[in-house]
Length: 256
Ligand code: 13P
Image (cartoon, rainbow, N blue to C red; front, side, top):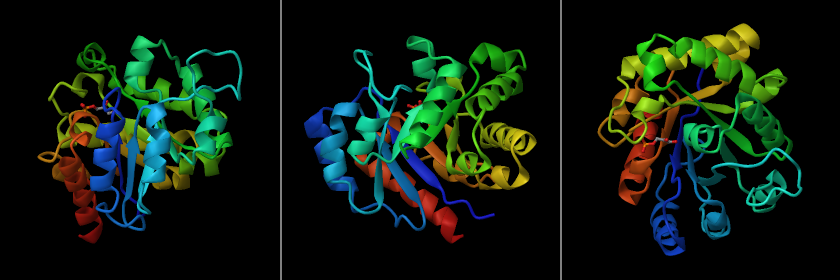
């Protein structure tokens, strides 16, 4: 099964308009062809317009969150309809920072996922355990609960189209990357869950990324693992040269 690698930058709450412009002008025409590697930059919502305008044919733009309602009195939230009207391609859902600081539940993530699909925005759904859960051997229990709830009620075709990002919380922003073996084991477990609750075909098609302190030094090893189809990158995605380098690492994997 040939799954196209997907390298996504999660800028979180970083970059002003000028900084985003500098990045996009440097990066937009320097990423691999979309037929080989999917490259995505997920930015703060007000940057969408400026990024979409200058994205270049091989670069995709994503948001970092959206509400599940079509519209309504939800001050400060972002609708799928608005993202769609800006031609935004991707949205990160259920990031651990959203779960922790904004109290997003597995149910919210499921509703948001369905809303994103309704507006034809591809979801990157984040799952992963915290340090205490890892140390108590609860990693698979956490993944079980998060993945099953996230994809509940989706059709096989929809499941095939989404991206799941395995992001162990203890590896995010800490410089402590999971070993390639640990990351692959968790991604393989998620693939097994998809096989169990959806189908073998869906489990072979769905793309699963690893995220957590990915950088130009460790990306090659992570991408060499059989179940890891790409990376969701925080800090190291802010630097245009590092970001381009990591997209090229994914291209090298395709060409092997
Ligand atoms: P870092 O790459 O900065 O560890 O962040 C990972 C992350 O949270 C991506 O969503």
